[in-house]
Image (cartoon, rainbow over all chains, first blue to last red; front, side):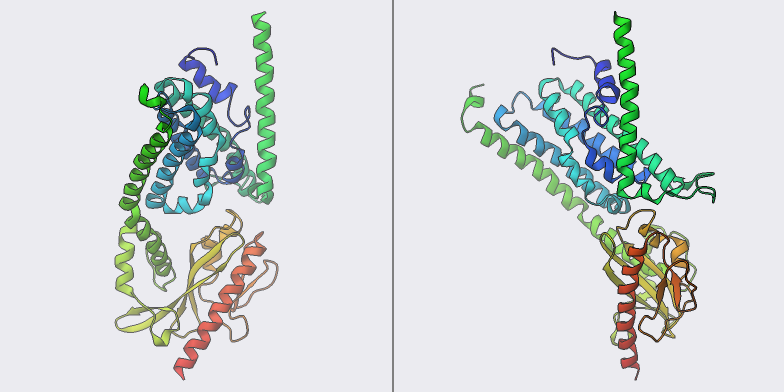
Length: 212
Length: 207
């Protein structure tokens, strides 16, 4: 990436133009697994935001000292540190949620979004900007996940955040049980990626025309 | 900059960073360990309190669970099988039998309350399960659990049957969770095994 980027570009890239999920198709594993209830998804999103922001910050702070040859190991170490910290906090202070999310909090360590941001951005940018990049990449991930979770919980259980919704919780709506099962995640995520990508591309074509 | 070019520098660097980060994690782990252990115990104690034949607040505040538990519940003794005992004014009111077994995804652990007549169910509650939210996970819902209250344990091979939602039920059976046949069948299996073992244990002692 040539030169330093400004904050506005970093934010826009992370949230929309280069959104980790529908542009880079990263972090799909957890996006499929924890999106059957909106509340679980929100906590998972928070965990990823926390980890990407702080690990990007730390990687960037250490970037002048980290030897190139071992930088991937160092990044993994730092990411694992923050993930375990979050997992431990959940276990101690929100045991029910910790049980709901099961192994997926620990698996954030292997979430490619975080490693990706550390490698592609934090390694070669200033700490402040890296923190913002991490924060908004995590947010970009969380927003797509919440969109998937809202569709799955609403169609599959007729509720949002556990609150029954009008129409969907009534007898007029036959709950689509498949939506809360694993296949529902594949369908929903694919459709959302499709929609967002079509929106994104039609928009970038317009900008190109405007530039001409 | 010189030290950075040494061949051993990466090793030292990783060593120091690992040392610092793991030390923080270990300290944090020590700091939260008691809370984590408490959480596990309180989950069990809350479940036990939920199956008692008395009206307690819907959601007992976490800090009162342990206090209430120690006041009301005694550990299993020779005559109660493996069940905890609920004692009020020196007399036995109910047995609370721990049950556990494989669910659809992971182990299900819970307790079932049985009145002193050794037949009437006073309630059921689960403190550990990882079933599909919205399907098997519904075993923790009030709708499913309330069915058990007042049912009688039968004398047959399955003291408390869990039947498919379309089948009729009687005083020895309840309805399974719709759409969660696997969870319900597995629950039924280990619940009934535990009940049979318990029935045998208490009748032998009684004779």
